[in-house]
Image: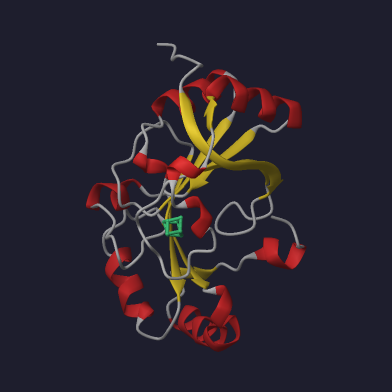
Length: 204
Ligand code: SF4
C-alpha cells in the first residue's frame, strides 16, 4: 500500500548529523524532530517542541526531498513525542526510498509505524505503555539521582530479553551522577553507559 505523500506532520526541525547517544551512537543519521509533547520530562532539553501548533506542517514528500538532498540513508524520528501521531504513512514512505527508520519515544503512546530500531526512554510523569516496552530494541534510562536506578530496574523487568539497556546521566548533573552510573554498571553489567556525545562533538 502506498500512502499519500501530501500527509503532513508538525516538524520542529530537521538536520543531518551524527546520532550522539544510545545504541546507534556515532552513526550518521537525518533527524526529523516532530513538534507536540505532553509528557513533561523535567530534564527535557527541547521544551520548545511541546506545542505542536508552534511548528509548520510539512509533507512527507518535502521531508523525503530534504533527506535525499542530504544523501542520508538513516532517519531518526524524534520529538516532541512522535508517537502522538500515526507514523505508518511516514515510515512506510521512507522505507519505499530504502531509508532506515529509527524511533526515539517515551513509550507513553501506542507505537505506530515500521521500524528498524526502537529506543524507549521512559519518564516519571507519563508512564510508558507495557506494549511499547515489549517492542523496545533499546531501553534508555536518564539518571538524575540515586533513586533512578531502582526505577530503571522496574522498566528493565518489562522489556524483552534482547533489549539493550542503557543508563545515561542527565546532562545538568553529569558530574554528580556519572560516578554512580560507573559503579552501578560495574556491579550490574547487563547495563551499558550512554553519554550525550553530540554535546562533546559540539553538534546538534
Ligand atoms: S518526551 Fe521528549 S520532548 Fe517530551 S518532555 Fe520528555 S524529553 Fe521532552
